Image (cartoon, rainbow, N blue to C red; front, side, top):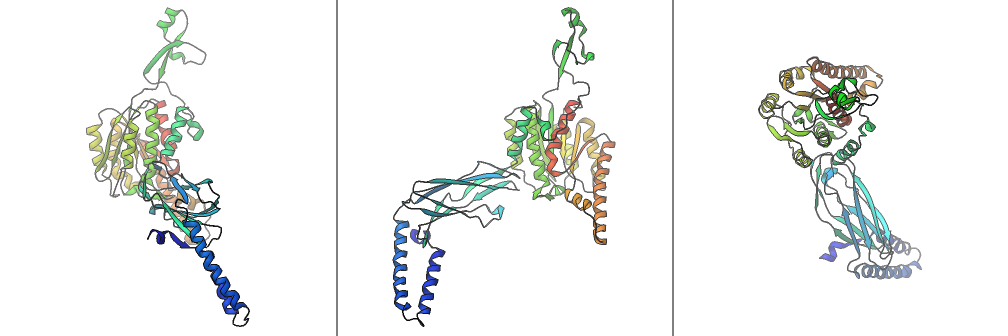
Amino acid sequence: MQFLRSFYINNTFFKYLALLCACFVLSYWFKVLYPIAWLLLLLLIALFLFDVVLLYATGKGVMAYRDTPRKLSNSDFNPIAVHYESFYPFKTFMMIIDELPVQFQKRDFLYKTALFKGQRGEFTYKVRPVDRGEYVFGNLNVFCSSPLRIIKRKFVFQKDEMVPVYPSIIQMQQYDFLAINNRLSEIGLKKIRRIGHTQEFEQIKDYVRGDDIRTLNWKASAKQNRLMVNQYQDEKSQPVYSIIDTGRVMKMPFNGLKLLDYAINSCLAFSNVALKRNDKTGLIAFSKNLETYVPAVQKITHLNTILEKLYSINTDFTDADFGLLYGHVKQKINHRSLLLFYTNFEHISALRRQLPYLLALSKKHVLVVIFFENSELEELIVTDAENLQAIYHKTIAEKFALDKKLMQKELQKYGIQTILTKPEQLTINTINKYLEIKARGLL
């Protein structure tokens, strides 16, 4: 049974068989070909049996394994390495077929190579998941042929390997590296001009040219007989919450990724930066019910808790209850905090229905409402209209784009901070707004 499961006939055999049939057909007119055709048939049978012996005489013909990360990163290209080695005493032709998870809908994976005895090789391919959850890789199938190329022997490795897809860890690591090295401006983040200073005193130091003369410490200057200034630093351990609307408005996909997953990826990267800057970070996810609540904590290990909670967010995309959110924030968050609220509005009337709750949140906390531009509409707006229908579509698209800007102005009119961003630039703009608020001492 094991032999039959691993035994396959190569396409080359059928080519040989087709030539042999042609010889038998031609022998009807050319009698001399008839004995030659029988000799070729016997030769083909002998080669067939010899090829079987070649491939099955060696018990462990080849070895192969798939090297996958412990966690795949959502929306990123994740490298998967496949290593293989031949133990056959002859040149082996190999076809490698990896059974990718059903979520990728890819059924044409095929890699061909050839190895000599003891030779090793490897290749790498990339996968881009667009949904969180468990991804199951099937069999790693290796089909081997001898130089005769008559039959193939199938080897199977690594059956049903499950790999979880988490929020974008690759993106988080990218911003983490830049934050540690104070190089966030390299990825497009604006340099924020500091207005005044925060109230957290750090130390007294000698005055140097360029220091703010308003921070002169006259008592220390008189005691030291030289000018001394107070040095301040950004306030630390301030509570910062990421609030994610998991309702119907976050189901819209852009480049294959839902707005919800853009928000989750951004939340993870931002939380990591905030923790590295010694602030407390927390998480709230809600729709019709409160789905996730993580209190703000200032521990770098707290990021693992946030990561796991973001990974496990599961929603039916029902209408979000902003009143429920307000009640929970009022009950659970007692200190003034920065609330980064990921949501979306497609029409100004939808915003005005929720505006009373947003105003109530902004009275006690620094609220930043983050919603999305429709980048596909922008492509339609810049495209030249060539007929009446195209003009109609372009006009409607411009109206929707204008509504987004009116919503932003409506929120700003009531003193609510806003971010109107393209989905692809969400993380950059969110971190930039956080740095701006910290620099201006608004929290």
